[in-house]
Image (cartoon, rainbow, N blue to C red; front, side):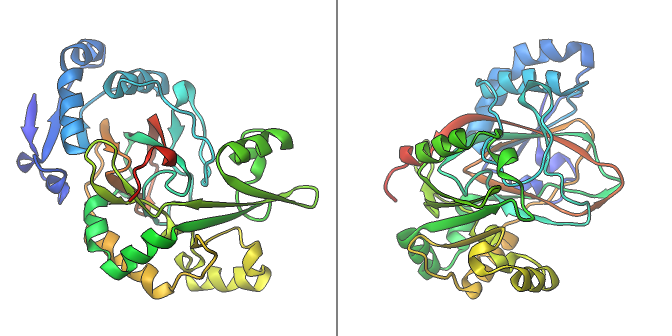
Length: 330
């Protein structure tokens, strides 16, 4: 059964896409396979047309079942979470927990892996257990964010690109976890294959630099999207206390993570504040219900997380690998 979002009290979720659709299914667990067989083609069409789709009422007993559902809806095998930047746990069927940051922390809106030259086109979030309060996964249309960023900032970011600098082995994720290996040669091979500069520092630390586009073109809609994590990687994203403590403990080059223009130039904090405002102005918030499944085109929609209280369990799966080399010149 397909219902228009206007029938539901979902705050601003009705602003997703042009057709404002939610799929309300209310399926019994033992009928899930039948529902998929009858409706997956229709759901895939709605998802492709809108770039975001909330399916409400899909009972799934575990990560393995979720994996099979996502393969059916995306029409692709799921991807490993490679070259990650946040802690999470891998479950069965290439399903992962959502980012395991403390419940009091806000995760800014971002497109998954947009700090890299390879990313998943499709990402899904399944709410196995909503928090007792808070814990929404806000989203924002990356096309609208692009249009909301002042043109002079857009032009500078587009022309100069971005360089992400990461230091592993300090307080951030260790390189063994990010690259899923303890073999330095495998790390070097991955970096060489993905245009990542690397530098070994002592026996256990690693520094990487990668230059990526700040603005991309969606391969199907041919629309420009704001697709980077400058506002999240930059030292200014931290609160004042954490920022000051890090700057006391580390030189700028040694910070766990930071971002510069692609030519190494400093990015003005004023520019980043306006970018954060663009995300804020376009943020769409809805309250999770148990058994909600949110499908996002990872280039068309950014996502984040709001603080919460109580137990919360949201699972994540990704599909359809895409690389920066496939992008048109912006």
